[in-house]
Image 1 (tube, rainbow, N blue to C red):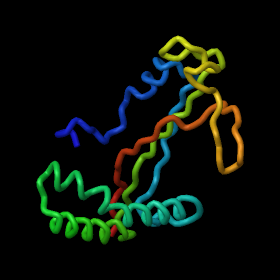
Image 2: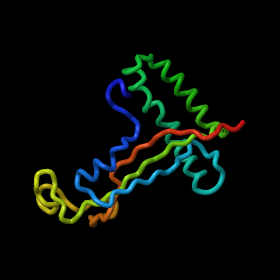
Image 3: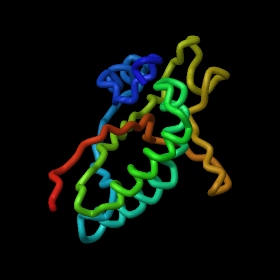
Length: 157
């Protein structure tokens, strides 16, 4: 993705960018997400099971455009590669994981946006609408951005 200036790595400047944009109490949390349920027991196993389901079902959609448009692969080649990756991802002897980066931040009540307007004016709102609950509420902090980096544990045989 670097070829088309669309890096997929987590930007180390994210915290500073949020601070420069006027947010306060910026925090980053890194959560290890396993590619499959190899890590037995509780939350890690369930997270791995669900991540594996999403990954295996979404892999073709995530792969087709970059591999055909950028790398010039044929669609049949991509589908063959995706099938192999799906198979490998489901093998419990492979202890792969991703690091999910979650940034939370708070916009101060006296926030002045880039246009110089306060949060309560036409420049923005300090409320977050939650249609699932039928209303809105003042948000003290909310996830701002997420990203992931891949890693791998030791492969056990």
